[in-house]
Length: 282
Ligand SMILES: NC(=O)c1ccc[n+]([C@@H]2O[C@H](COP(=O)([O-])OP(=O)(O)OC[C@H]3O[C@@H](n4cnc5c(N)ncnc54)[C@H](O)[C@@H]3O)[C@@H](O)[C@H]2O)c1
Image (cartoon, rainbow, N blue to C red; front, side):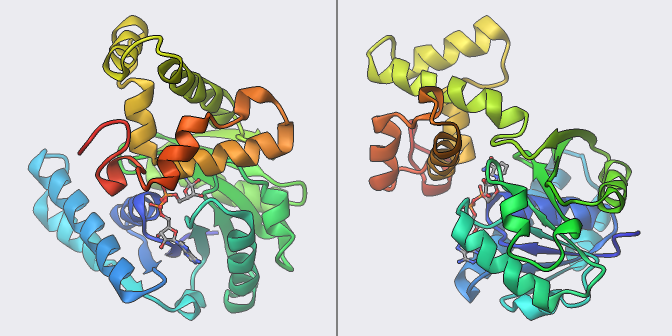
């Protein structure tokens, strides 16, 4: 199976990066948002990211223009009817994702694959909202998608061998390394990452050190590219809270319980980079 036309549901932080990666790989991309304002915001994310690639000498201007030209923007899910693969990158909420998958199942051609970029939710449960659970798979990209070299492929209980074989091709198409995980909350990366991030917030709550020193300690002491509180701001505090709540809901393990400070910050609209303020101000 080839992926000539790829649909992306939601062009927020992750969806815009996914759209860019496929467009740069030569695929036609249909990018969908829920209303015109968000569509304009998503377009602006994409234009900025392409411009950055050009400025940094990673992408010739003509290639950036051609890739952007391969993305069509819409607010209609029905525009996914001819897609070979649709990747959902909407908010981390099971009810929302299931509603979207039920709609996509009706709209998309029968042979199309449906994928979710979920960080923590069950692919098997998302697939249960469709009549094609064998053609539903998790494709977990990392932020920023055009730069990060990994995709976690998540197999639901009913995902078929054919679907798994088809998505294996994405390694070459997108020039990314693939790892495979079963449908376990948090898969590989977030299973290990979430307790670490939450421990950093607990350290801050408990007055162990300032946010700057927690980040500097980890960055220089462990040779990480960024400290945990900077990473939380980068991922989005709302997304981290949704992920923690989903994982705690499944495991009932205190390591995944969201620290009160995280919940308070999300309630206050301090979502990190995307809202201009989180642990740091941007
Ligand atoms: N932020 C990360 O680092 C990261 C990494 C990997 C995976 N993810 C996952 O990717 C998904 C999106 O995360 P994000 O960081 O891009 O979030 P975001 O807040 O930047 O974007 C969320 C998107 O969902 C859309 N949306 C909201 N309500 C909707 C609805 N009712 N119907 C359709 N679309 C709707 C929004 O318009 C927006 O495009 C989540 O499942 C998240 O867990 C995030």
